[in-house]
Length: 193
Image (cartoon, rainbow, N blue to C red; front, side, top):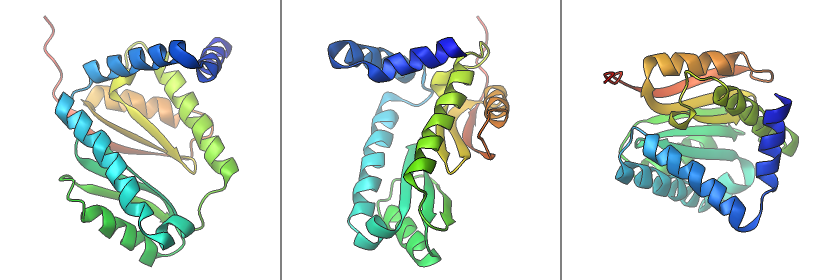
């Protein structure tokens, strides 16, 4: 585990061309192993930016909430905090108006936006979950997206059911995880050659 933390820390410190090459290689592997078509992956990434832009156009949402949208296979996961249901609903409506095409999973919690410390801890929890997944030889981590929000770990992906169950088990047994929420879409297992 110490070795994994050292590797992750070293990657975070990389700068310049070497860092770009490393990120490009990992990103390329993820894109190649993804069950989504290349055009869907690009559409999902563009939709992430559209959601951020749409939410930022509302000053009250920008100033009073901590809301993020993540798109996977045209489905949207909305996470974060809003101080009241009016602002939460306004954020959901702004995303609905984008007509991204899939289902919107509303996981926005009513409450004060999380602190910088909580968000930093969430980043650390995500890193730990991904690190543990990386060490699991029976799990293809490139098919799982991990997002932590206030101790709740959201798992997304277009994935085989057995892989999803393994990912959930790993996340559930990681220190700092309060709850695991699955937002998977399942695919049929591939036939062995």
